[in-house]
Image 1 (cartoon, rainbow, N blue to C red):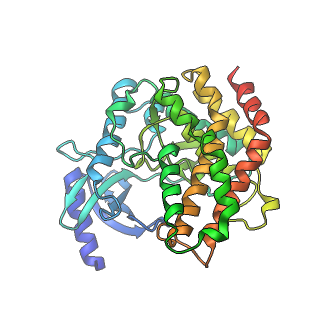
Image 2: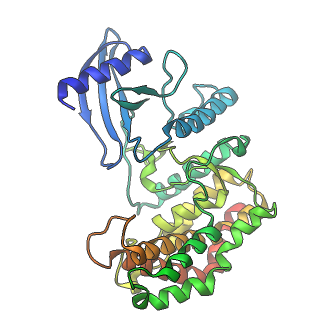
Image 3: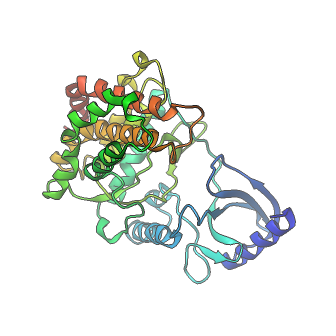
Length: 368
């Protein structure tokens, strides 16, 4: 799309939202590879207002209406319960409504959505204890704000996303076929999944028997999905609600712990470096549990550490299956990259299992 066509398209989309002013600048922002995201400035008599216009990749997200409907339900609930100008409403970055009340526009040029632009920072990794605490608090507060919402009214945007029982079945189906003959190079790793397949089905089974309820979960709790004030280090809001759907509260905790409190990157080949950094873990846990303990049941609290190990196991199985079946899902930079990733996550699992009681104790410390 040419610059002129892009500006015309954005101008047309803006008219659906009744945004005042004339466009003075359009700048592509973000490092994502899926959606096209632009910061757009509008000048009017009241000054300059900035918005984020995002064109959703409807090839990757084949049913974007479902995603936006989930987000609208969650946003409407917060507005009705707490008010549009409440701190609770500002904690979650929702999308603007068009003049007809929709939170998206489907146009010939694509599927678009608009949010207010916030001048703040994000972190891929965090080493500052205060910011780790604040990040944990933000994700815990997200769940706390939505703890009264009936999660079962949301649709699953990724069915069985954290269903480790089903993911394990799919994994061993791929191992059995071994169409590329790669299983001989990873027998020790396959044995690990066979040894622990029942251990990491426990969360699914605890939900199935009614012990762990479904909550509204974010399901992508990377640290860069929190906007952080550049001066104070405090969280401004939670970003990227595309994967908001029903899930277990512990999934969000576990995913963040797995990705953000490991000593090293998730494809580290020197496995001696892999393991939980307990300084990071404690600060994040302190924030998350402090913000969420008012609604968490004892059983949910007890599932937190298990979720961290379970999510690492799940991701390891996905990496290894992708290696076995030809590296079709995760982008690789060299031959064997997904095998290296799987080995790293398996080592992280083993490390967390070895200090599991300590992980549980830190959760208990801030829950009690």
